Image (cartoon, rainbow, N blue to C red):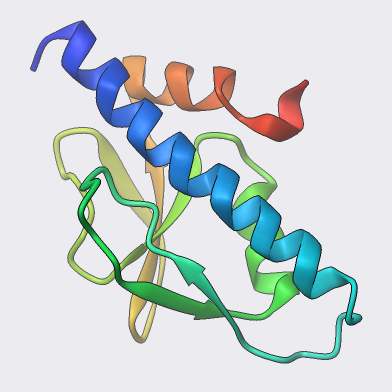
Length: 111
């Protein structure tokens, strides 16, 4: 996979992460009560519409590292990602190499 392809995939995933940040902001306004919220799968497939259910604290654990994303089970890219946690229905993946650097650079919390 070329560097530009990896960058495009990272940008797709970063877009889903940005949307999930807005979902988190809206959910946080209601408090952190352990409620399950539906976040978008952050895989590279721009047509993916799957949802991942997480509490706000689970979501925050994913966001603690700019190279990490939450994806529906089976949506990871084994060429670019390593599964760092797996739960029923979803996985937390960490980008490696160039994709990891791009993901960290595009992290809205890194500003």
